[in-house]
Amino acid sequence: MLMISFSFRYVPSAARRLYTTASGASSVITPTHSIYLSTSTNPYFNLSLEDWLFRHAPQKEPLLLLYRDAPCVVIGRNQNPWKEVNLRAARAQGIPWVRRRSGGGTVYHDLGNTNFSIHVPRTTFDRGATAQVVLRAVRALGIDAGVNERNDICVGGEKASGSAYKIVSGRAYHHGTMLITTRLETLGDLLRVDKDTMITKGVASVRSPVCNLAQFSKKVSHEMFVNAVVDSFKAEYGVHEEPCIVNDTDDLARIGYIQRGMAELPSWDWAFGQTPEFEYTIKKPFVWGDVTAHIHARHGVILSCTLQGLDSELGKALEGKRYGFVEDEELGVDLSGRREVVWAWLKEEMKSYD
Figure 1 (cartoon, one colour):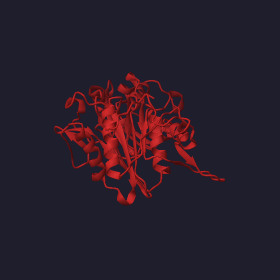
Figure 2: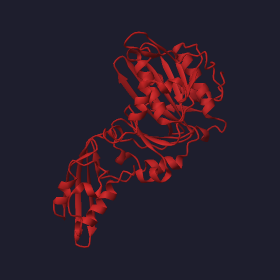
Figure 3: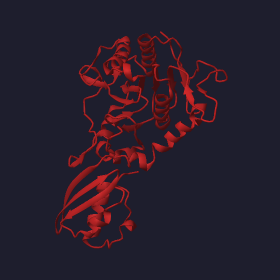
Figure 4: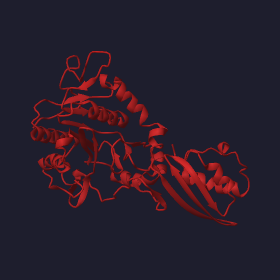
């Protein structure tokens, strides 16, 4: 089995070619390898690298990317961060969240979790087949794993890996997490959200009991899993070349497409502005009586807010404002008396901790 040291690069930096550039007025940068191992732990870089590889690699060739991220929460393309992420806990622990470009549910990344991304032509894409590539890798580590009906890797009846997919034009990928020594208590804290009355048109995560591979094999590690997946990928797709190890300090990080992706992911327009339409109903007793708020928002902007138990002026003032980002001075209404205490409650309920 090929052993990988992450302080060593397979190809000397002076000699290796991470991509080719076509000449001409409309230069096109194309990836030149089949297997990429990123030693960066920056989720913005790794997700942008993945998207660049997906969009620019030869469509008919299989490709594998493996990487780890510093602690972060990653939500699906069509999910609601207020519904999926415990934003208060994330802020308290200094852990960011990121909206990825594929669908699926919310996951937690840290250095105890390894991410894989398998890209193939759309015409040959089979979720079961790509899941088997990862399953064979786990079994090669001596762990009795299986695949459930959602193509997640499970061990002992619990999920060790969650998957998501993306299909665009002639290309498709299956990517996922593999929990090896992840801090499961942190995962639980960050993904535990109590907002049952928030109804979203987006995708809701499917909550499942999870486990680490290390619970079933004390010797398993990130490096061992990477080696096993590389071997399984090579065998499945007839790839013979060695992996290309990259980092966010390489030339790749200077590619305009990747730089734009890294700038877009943390922006309000992407992180919050892509949130599907949702409605949120909350109720609170005050000394003068109960107040019920019904908030309707789309793409992170409040469309309407009706308040039962208070005059309508505050609710109308919230229309057109960014959910969770409204400052007192933006409202343009008198915030004294009952309005002041109701607004303090609403602001805390909508808080984005960003």
